[in-house]
Length: 446
Image (tube, rainbow, N blue to C red):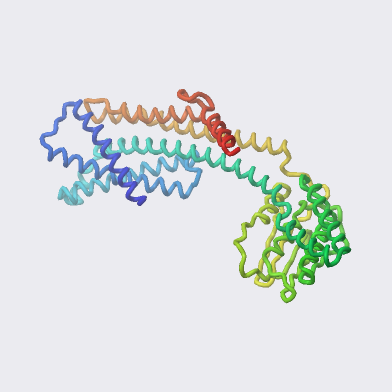
């Protein structure tokens, strides 16, 4: 389907070029003797259009794959221009072989011996103009996609922060705990009292730590023990839990509630029965807090979303370069959580974040300026080339104004985008419109 669409575009471009050339010939007094002659010229024109378009489209597609989101960087853009020129000249040579040797009946050696540079002028110039138009179109399209991706990134960041708050304790844990409490009240009132006290401490810890970026290792380990005591009551003798009694550095730091998410996942994704006991161990190894459990996956379970593990990784990524490591085998599952030093500072403080954003914007600004100045330099270099080619072609009509004006419009558009100027919609119109639509969307959702 994609090839068919590109062929349709090539055919359409050929029709436009044929109409423009026909107008130029009419202005210069060139007349067509018959409809058959016109039809033959049209077919030759379409042959040039389709082959040149498809060759350049294929090359541009190759550039998009090799340099995703970086095609319009100055270095890659220069590669695209030079490569496009070479491909265009080779394609024109092949087309002339088709028209002169295959269709015209000339021998290949006579064809090569009689070839002149002048035969390539018009086709090459038309191809350059069309290529510039499409590069400009794809540049604008790429810019719009970048804006959309930036907005999605902002939305994704907000969503991640929301998940970090939302993913503190699974609501099902609370419901299950209340069910256990109901049973204990009738069977063992004293155990119910202890269970209620532990449950209240769990939620107090959650409320106290939810806005903290780091807590001490001792606090998190005490919480994990308390949390597991609730699960042990719920599953009776089906969980075997072990944890270190003493710590070498109890004041070291970890992300709050990270152990809860790991322990919760162990229970959620594994069978926990008297005949299939779940063994959970917390240990300190190589400067990491390691949670290990035997692997006995539930046979019927909905596909894991991975939100809990992603939550931990994202939160640690904001604090340290040390990764959260997951090891999984057929018999065992373990997660290694980095233990941070007491003096650990938050990598992404507000000031650092603002500085990074300023640097990123400044860098993007410099890249835009480099791209525009390169584009302008190439344009100024080609203007006299077009004029010279027009002169030596001895045409009565100044056709050079078409590529110069067409390319010039592309340069003006590039300048308007680079210097953030829009004569039709005003400065920052796109940003204001995006903000307006986002606010309207929020109002509708409320």
